[in-house]
Length: 338
Image (tube, rainbow, N blue to C red; front, side, top):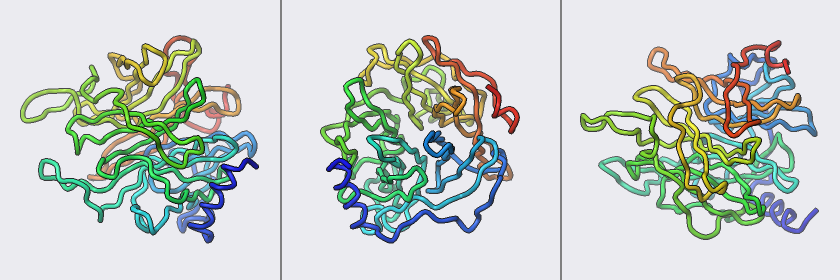
């Protein structure tokens, strides 16, 4: 085992030697995907265990062998109670990324008891992406001691992982609109072992750059202010793209942008139209065990005043110069098709 990994594991053990993956009180087996309520679903297809691991909002995990029926939830995220997150933070939009033989859990943590700003009369809580680590895809995921990623006075969310062509690791995330009134997508470089960030963040684009999002502000129509859920990918021709989500009035909507330079620095050009059906968003991409590219995202509707979010899967064609959305995968037989 390499020395940096030894140091990371030692730091983990010093923070939470007691932590382990355990079944949630609501644990069930063989649950159909359309019966799971989950926001921001992210799927890791782990060939070593022949298992799909689905995370998202809530700090929980589901596992499956076929993408249709799932076991869970498991409790896998164990933040440091002595850090700024506190003992019981909100956990949003978790992703798992394999990197250098370990598994890294990127998630947005919110501590409402820590107020960092007051913007337009709104109290802004401490919210930021932190990175936890495990030597197994199923966790437990533990913090790296002393790791800091983004400025404490900046309300950020939905950090994702990307390596450039030189192998340099980055976090791409959103600076939330509630603090700047025009949400952004930004990048910051990470340390080689992902135990923190280095240098300054750089703006990639703003919510107002979108040609398709819309809202009414002070009686005037304008681009929506929300940036949400970035996810980086390359097409079959090597073109760098990014999924991200905003709104068209009250409709949650998935868009895509492409980098003209082929790097994170862009410039980023927004596609003129959304790429998924209405009320779908926060997408990510993965390859199933049959080699197909799939998009995981959630559908979004309001029932009796409650937001209902269910994981959904679509086939994706990445063979050309642009991402092309394919058919909606609905059930067991459908999920197994090549």
